[in-house]
Image (cartoon, rainbow, N blue to C red):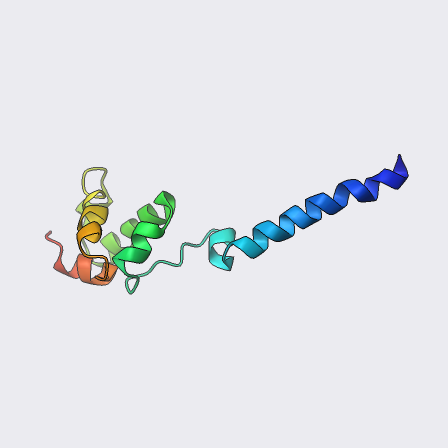
Length: 97
């Protein structure tokens, strides 16, 4: 049985290596990498949790608390889908209170 133990570990190590190589460091570690200078295109390609995280952060930073609510948050992807080259900072600067 002991002679087979090393065979069982190798596929797991190979699989873990493939997963780590296949994703960026920030995505694997949990950071979204999104900021006020990120484009709407970047935002739309991010995970839903990363999107909500940056919305909450920028809504607080730009003093736009309504965008952190369940009714306000969908406005960001809606605006971003029409303006993929706009930055998130530009969106929150122009957003109504």
